[in-house]
Image 1 (spheres, one colour):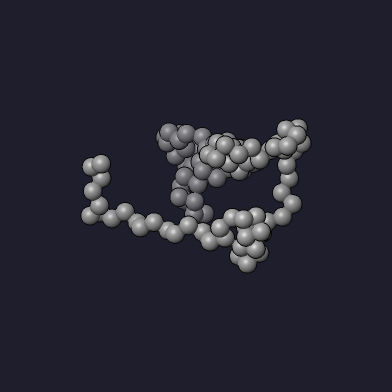
Image 2: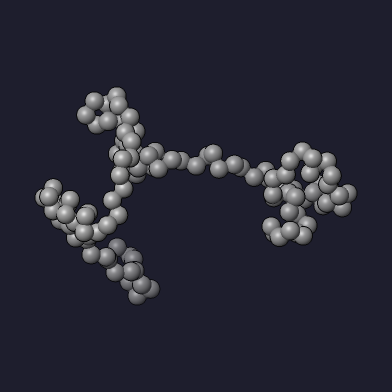
Length: 111
């Protein structure tokens, strides 16, 4: 559908005003025949901080101590040994919980 020679490409791929003026008559006729809803832009997506607040009730935008300051990410720790050392220091279990079994077709869901 997005190939360079696709008949409906002009309806899907955004084009500038000059490109729309030069649209071929056959493409214009195909566009008139098709009922296509406009493509929404990606601005409706929810940011990660709002998602964390929705799902886990964690407000990542305001300081939990003073409620006025705005939080910023200053580091992202990705190395497992460093993460384990920090969690151990905080008195938390450094090992992730075991993965649960995948639900199979033989499992009874009548409960």
